[in-house]
Every structure is written in C-alpha cells, then in structure tokens.
Image (cartoon, rainbow, N blue to C red):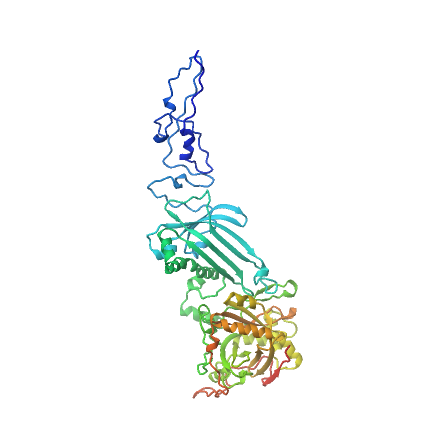
Length: 619
C-alpha cells in the first residue's frame, strides 16, 4: 500500500490575507482557511501553489482531507468597528475616488450646539476618542472653514487630534484666598497633538499639528470675573504650512482667528452670567424695545429711572463736564479706552457680607453709593491740600450751573515730588440716594436693613468731629481696593489685588465743608507705598486699573459693606500731564448764571456746614 501522505498545508494567502486586508481594530474577522486559485478573494499576484500539487494517490480506504473553504470576496466597503466606529476605508492604504462624508459628532467632549460653537468660530465639531485618566483624554476636533478664511478655499479642511490635560491651580498661587474672599480655584488646560489607533487620518482632511495650546483661567480678586490667558502654536501643514513658515504676515493671519476667540468668549460669559464688563446689544441684553408712550407711562408710574452712559458707565445726573479747567481727565470707554477714566460695575468687587465675622465670606457689592463726577490729574511742585476750596474746584462750577450733586466726596491722592503728581476724585451722591441716607440716619436704634448699616457708618465717618479719636476712627475704616485689569504680570503680583487700610501706613488729612467731605492721602509717607507708586508710574501708559473706595465694617451692625465709589483708569500717560499753576485764577460765572452756592448742595451728611481742617497723626 502506498504510504500515507500528510494533508496539504494551508495556502500562503491565508497568512497574508490579514496583512493585506487588516480588520478594523476591535472587530472579529472570520478565519481565512484558504481558497483555490482564481478565487476573487485572492490577489492574483499572491496566489498560492497549493493547486499545483501532484494528483492525489491516497488509497480509497483512507479518508481524504476536508475540502478547502473559499475566502469570500471583500465587500466594497468594510464594516465599521463597533467599539471605535472607525472604518477601515479611512486607512492610508485604501484608496477610492469618492470622498467620505464627515462623520456626525458622537459623544462629543463639548456640546457644540449649546456652548462652544456660540463663541468659537474655529470649531466645527469634536469627538472624544479616549479617556486616559480623570483629568486627561484624547479628542478629535474638526476645524471650521473660518479658521482658514484668510487663505481662501483652495486648501483642504483641517482637523486636530489632541491630547488634553487639565489641572487645578491651587489658591495660594492665585488671588483666590480667604483674604480676598474668592472661593474658586484657577484652571490650566494644556493640549498637544498626538496619535491614536482609534483615530487614524481621515481622507479629505489634512491633519494639522498643534505644538502647544494652553488656557490659563484664574479668578480676579474681589470680583466675579476671571482672567483667561491663551497660548497657541499651530502648524497647518500642506502649502499653507509652507507659506506660514516663510512669511510673518501669514503667521499672524493664521493665528488671528484663534486669538479672536478670547473676545467672543468674554462676550459670551458676560451675556450668560450677567457680568456686563462691556455694553451688549439690545437683543442680547434681553431688553424689550418700546416706544415713547411706554416710556412715558413707566415714568408716571414711579420715580424716574437713573440712566448711565453705556460706553463709559457714567451717571447722566452726576457727571457734568468741566471745560474751563485744562487738567480735567476726559471720559473714555471702559473697554479699549486710552488716557481717560470710566466707571465700572461695583458688582465686580467682593466685599464683606453680613455674616463675614462668622464665616469669612465675601459677596459681590451692591451698586456704588456715589458715582464719579470728575477727575483732576496734574503735575505740581507743591502738594495741593484741601483742593475742594481752591479756585479751580469743580464745586464752584457746579453750584453756578445748578448741577451740583446732593453730596460730594473728594479723595485727593498726592505723590509729593519735584514735580509731584496728584489725582483728585470727585464722587457725587444722587438725589435718590440722598433721600435714603437721610431716612437711614433718622431711624433710631440698630440698623434694620443693609442700606441702613452703610449710611449710618458713612454719617459717622463724615461728621464734623476732628478730634484725635475721630481721626483714628477714620484711619482704621477708609480702605482702598485696587484691581489691575490689564498690565504686566509683575505689577499684578506686586499689588496682589488686596484691600488696604490706607491710614495704617499713609498720612491722611480730612476736610469738610458745605456739601462735601475731603480725604487727602499722601502716598509717599510710606517707603513701601512709594516704591509701588514709582513702579506704577512707569507702566501707566499701558495700565488699566480699577480703584474702589470702601468704608470697612468691623461689627455686625456695620455689615454688609458696600462700595463707596470706584473709578477705572485707562492708560493714562503721567509724564504728559499738565503742570497746575501755583495760583490758578478764580472762577468767573458766565452772565446770567446762578450765583455761587445757589445750587443743589444740601450740606455734608450730619455736619453743620462749617469748614474744618485737621491732619491726622498717621502711623
């Protein structure tokens, strides 16, 4: 009998088929058991030689080997893998003429329809590819055509495969701590390009490279706002990448849409959370349009509503321009203003709450009690004290014109030198607030409302008592809260955006008169304050800073606190300020004007209207 022969080996294409036609990652491919020559599933150039074996001479009593099962032909389009939903047709080795449609977003890392697409013009849609840790994942983002609008429609669309990691910034490295009253931490989000098996390059999309993308979000002290810093370094690839590598203008045009997202993000946050740092359109602000009849009906129904200028935030019933004094600062917009002042929202600053002595919690302040009426900024060879009684005081103009506020609070910040600098802030109280103040001071006993607490403390601060005990009380209560809105990081870290009791370090003088109270602060009596002031002078032309003045409450009857008055300086060039004459001319009212003192001044709260002067001992 013929010797028994072993069954033929499996065809060669059974081992190479998986390499030539790899299954989708995660999918279970049927085992390839081989096929005869000429079968559709075997490439002709790799057909095996199993069909050329000699004729089988196995005896009849020996069972033949099982027949080979032919490999089914590959489908026109391979199925998608259920776990990763990635088609094998997107692999680089597969070629077909038809461009695949863009996949619909699946389990997006963000909600494009509700959040990101409303402010990010460079975002088309995004998918979450893999979750690596609670703070790290891999995302696939398809860029919108607006990201390459500067280069026309000749280039292919771009996408990014990013490794993303986010961490919390501890409070001790930001302005968020118990002293500032901010309870939120900062965040840092870092992204960089990566590769992943579940997201190979997609046909029709050019994969861009992100060397670095970082978002740094930190809270602003004493404010409900946050500061967002954005870094980006992209390489778009293709002919656009070659052009960008050779042209600085092309690099600016490439990154411009990505940097413009910051402004859109700020507008979206302001509209979403109600923190109006910039004026918003009527439709976005949610105000209903009405005609004159509706406005007249609303005015007849109750007291007149105070109006504020949308760009500068100044109150129309308080701010009156003074045109005959050359060293008066001009009002400028809160956003983008240069060499001027404006009035931000008091709600952006956090002050002591009613239960601060127990829980140490600070909350956004109520609207400021006084509005900015004017600002004088000038150079002088000698410090000018009690400026409210000087001939160039705006009080004389307002009284002659009949536009003097009910009560005026003056803060005179002096930087003694040769030449020295002075900034004088004039805050006015409206008629409505004046009525509330008189009613609160007339109530006997303990304060009943937060407004009563503030106005009783204000009346105690401005009363015409200039004894050492009264001056010591004022030194311990008058507080300055600065907030650097835009400026160098060195200055932000040095100032700290922390409140400061000025009387603890600086010498202060107090003056009162008919309808006003003045506080003079000598900023050079402290060596530390003088060094900070000298550093600030060099950055003033590029600095945007908010100054809020507060009367500190130290007992439950004096809480909650409230902003007394605040102002925003926008890029004021101190070296270009005008030198004030030593003896300015007296004010001459125009013909037909009301006599001086015949305005609307009602006298200082709880004062007798007599001029008094004292200089505190300081510390």
